[in-house]
Image (cartoon, rainbow, N blue to C red; front, side, top):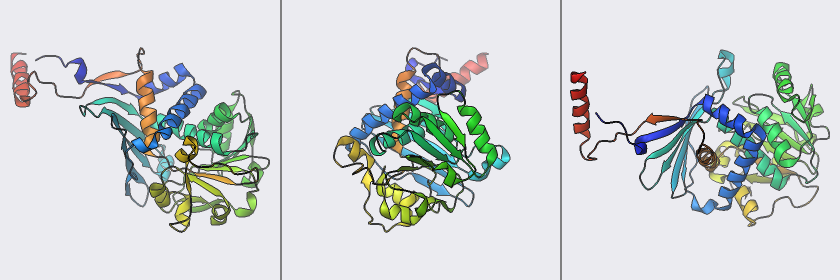
Length: 353
């Protein structure tokens, strides 16, 4: 029985390997690099297959597949969202992804994406703020201090120059956790006891809560002119974070409207309410922030192209490192038409042994 060829071995990036890769590059640098990779792919947005993610909803969560292709590579992510998981000591969101070669259909990378999704989500938020937030923004409010919060704060620091982050969560333990994790990382960290306190003086407001419900994290009277809002928590039907009146006076920017209208904040609005796709701003086809007094809103639900960019970036970063394991994933008979013969030879080898 012959050993698999190099072509049949697929690099697999485990959670441990991903952590080692991220620490090797640096957490902030990794998110800056991911933002650049996503920005480059957004500039060639028309080249990609696009479809809303395929979702299977239940009363307690959602499981989704997120596929796309640029004609050369194909990628997909499996991801869940189960807010009640934390009560059992489990992650709210877990994910893994696959990158494949379109020419052969062979996978070229299998990777954990729980950590990578947190990194790419924060990178996308910071990328949107780079294009939409006030240029002099130095203070950020982070409402919802769960698993995503530290990544969001550090991405804003690295890409947008944020110097102060004001934290609030309905669970004070989450705020204490976030404050401790951000200590010594170059940010002024202020723990707040209300959302109103958190947004004082903030030019960028990020909401990232987990409950699967229509919620009002921000009311209209809380949001002054000239701020930029990243609404990250809304990611499925029936789950929002902002009062509808905020949306009615904001310039709204989205990833892919057919998906965002199902899952994002704009599910509260009429189906024909105008929105601008972020890739159009990045490519110069549409205007971003119009003036200093405008409220801009990035209605972020996450889109497959961002995961594709992240997987392709990780695949490139692996070269020359040992931060992966090679898996024997693809049957590799001497004669491609004789798959059964490969099984027979394996049977003979077992008998001899």
